[in-house]
Length: 185
Image (cartoon, rainbow, N blue to C red; front, side, top):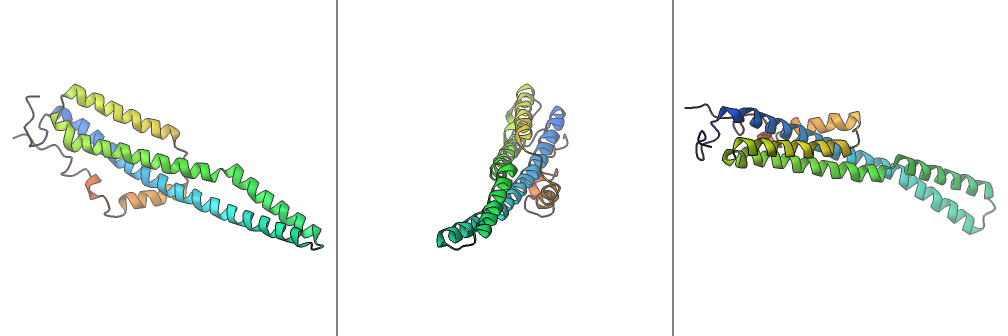
C-alpha cells in the first residue's frame, strides 16, 4: 500500500469510509451492549420479584400442611398462589432472557473491541481489499448478534443510551482524533 505513511496514520482517502463505518459500528455496539446489560438486570429483577414470593408462599403452604393445622382451605389457596407465581415465572422465561441478554451484551462488546482494534491498529497495515473483507466479516458478526438478541424494553434502551453516552466512561468512542483520517500533506 504505497499511499500510506508508515506509522503516521492512513492517508489514502479510500479508507475514510471504512474508518467511519468502523467508528459507527463501535458506537452502535457500545450502546447496544449497554442496553443488553440493562435488559439483563431487568430480567434478573423480574425473576427475583416473581420467584421469591412463589418460594415463600410455597414454604408457608407446606409448613401449614405439615403442622397439622386444620386450615386446609388456606393451605390450598397458598399452594394455588405459589403455583400461579411459578407458572408466571415459567411463562416469562426471565432466567433464559436474562442469560441471553447478558450473552448478547458480551458479544456486542467483542464486536466493538474488534472494530476498535481494526481502526486503530490493523487497518493501517492492510491493503484495501483485505480491509474491506475484514469489515464485512465484522458486520456479519454484528448482524448475527442482532438476530439472536431479544428486543430490549423501552426502559433498557433509555438507560443503556444514557450509560453509553451520558457519561465520560468511553470518550474514545467519539468520532474525533482517534479515528479521523489525517489530512494529506
